[in-house]
Length: 534
Ligand SMILES: Nc1ncnc2c1ncn2[C@@H]1O[C@H](COP(=O)(O)OP(=O)(O)OP(=O)(O)O)[C@@H](O)[C@H]1O
Ligand SMILES: [Mg+2]
Image (cartoon, rainbow, N blue to C red):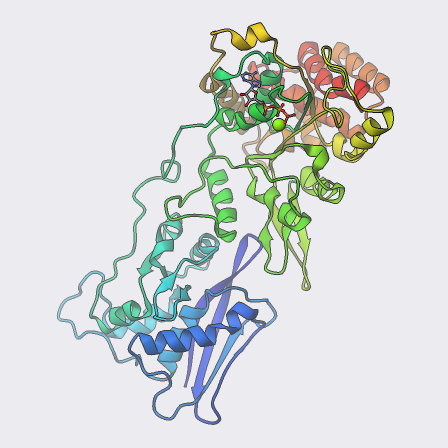
């Protein structure tokens, strides 16, 4: 007998419907799974068999010996272990262990309990996902959120999934999320022996798990007003920053304080980042929503694949995990050249395409890059108080690790000086992060209004057309920019990026037009380091 159960497959950040067809028949003993399964899917046979038996059912009763499972469409690769539940359910249905006739004879409709006549309909109108343990319990599954969104899109009413994933799926309104503990839990539900009520999300998207505690606060970082200002601009408009300075000057500290001045995410951003973390399997039980902007700081030994994503079982890389947040590359010169070069596409396009045997997968990667490095191997090149011990060749080699095209994608180049001792020892508390964040949030509001009807969300994402529309200069400012471009031999990209930063600087003070003052500040961020370090 043949039965069909619906499930889903994730490709990139999107999910597609999978029809799990299960045929149980007589003949030579076999358990075959077809339809481009990967190793984990193929291994489902072992888990399903043990789970069925250990849940108290008969595996293939009545002389049935053959199980053939087809995962359609057959040309999309199916990965992972989430098909255990649909395969087990289909096998039980096909072998008549759960016959369509089960279900309670009810006088009155009882909430949370299906009626006998409804069971076939419920199965037809539901998505089933979940990995089974050998004793039939359901385990945490990756990538549930995109599947729940798919159910909503296709008007599939119900999603049956592991209990531990229920809150994540509940972020999608308009579907019934049924939390399951085990295979027999589902069976008892169909038998009318137990109730399962759809889960409800108690709080709004932005409230769940939100804590306003930050590890570092700008208030405790002494001096460095110029750098803090630049980081405020980066945070407001989403611009990339490179900090160069001698050891102990506070580069890492400043970067780590960055999350405390990032604005709160809106609902669209929360859903985007949560989807990425869901697919990467990084959402924990306590954290169903990613509503704090991500701050990723991969080590310099990170591989290419870990940085941009992909691999045997495709997974979002650091650039996508930092989507809508910060990617912090500390000790930039120590990263492999190939790794840095692989960042060129995501930095420019805000997304990364990873090639696969069949087509390619695209993950979003709109992040603020914050990079830091020393100016030379000993770290003191250009330091006013301490002599550099490196030879000219060593300094050259060190800097050559960062290519021109990579540097060109960075909007704000900063020289981080060491803080003077009296400043460091003073008791004065600087402006706190929450005050800075208020200005940043105001600037973001202006941008929200500006880009209301477009895909762009912040100034850094503007394309040429938008730059032309929103970054107009008066004659005096135009002359200033022209001189700067000639003097510092800047690229077309640099020209556009200077304008975008200037737009953000104007937004921070609520100005409609970019003035010479705003532009001059933007130009200095671009040119300060180039002339004496690179
Ligand atoms: N402006 C500052 N205010 C208060 N403490 C500071 C400041 N700058 C540096 N420090 C102190 O110095 C420590 C080292 O700073 P940090 O690690 O940021 O230096 P760095 O520039 O990253 O150095 P390196 O180039 O060696 O990585 C900090 O943990 C902090 O204790
Ligand atoms: Mg450091």
